[in-house]
Image (cartoon, rainbow, N blue to C red):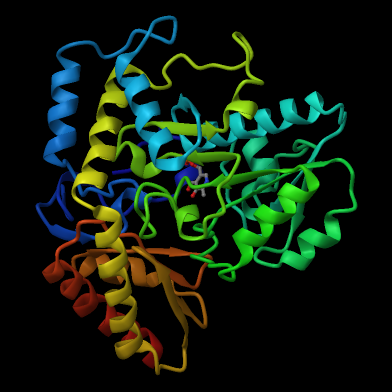
Length: 391
Ligand SMILES: Cc1ncc(COP(=O)(O)O)c(C=O)c1O
């Protein structure tokens, strides 16, 4: 089913999914799949979680939208919840991860101008993915996303990821105002920096008066084994962006910031029509509550490390398997060559997986995946990788 009236940016889509429940989805032919991608790290609670469905149906019957001209009690409640979890004082809600990063970039620029830095630079990382609007794209790395869209925004310098000496080497530039990065790079293929990296960055930012901006759009909301990934390193950012798992499928993004930084925004300087409307805010409150009450970050940590151990046991000795890694339920198997055909082979066998960076199998199952589904994931995926290896 490929409509000629859709733009061609997504290429051909092989499957048509029409229903979901928990970690399962069904296509239009009635075939059932175990979903180990969760709509790209979005449906962390699984599909159609009853708490989110109840919040949505109730709110859809009450008030869907009113715009940010009015108080939105569930938006305030959501800001309170995220502030209590993150330790950051203020929240701005928007509709996507990209928009959350735009807000973060704008805050960095306001911060720069408040310090009379006229042409501010933000340090960003090679391998980074921050979104596709012109601002976020300028922070994103890689010719595939960037080619053809020049001129991009000025004011971003890319440095190697995970290498504190590269940041120190750039530190002589007086125009730098912030470092913006993912605590674990997602689209690059689950790239995990050295354990001390975030902490070192925090210290350097403190010394230099730079802002630490963490893009937790993919790593947030329990995915890596704590509500936000930064909580595992105690490197509290000045600005944090999140989206994806926050709405479990409802479009919502958030930019959180310390009071001093957030207060640089005054009425009229930033905004959105839909962002944080009653429907999405109510759904996101249900998501946050469920992650907390069902201790889903802990669950992700436990089942994620079991999966990594099992994958090591079953695939670790294969010469073409270069690495198996993960944090919580953000996992990757790095192979020695292109392996995108595994996506169709897995779907054929009833499993949804993702391949990124051409040779990394990425797994992002729901945080509440059952033990038996985790076994099933391994039982489908491991033989496929063994067969790929044998070729
Ligand atoms: C780390 C990160 N930042 C930003 C984005 C962009 O988010 P969105 O697609 O919701 O605009 C993504 C999406 O994959 C992401 O993984």
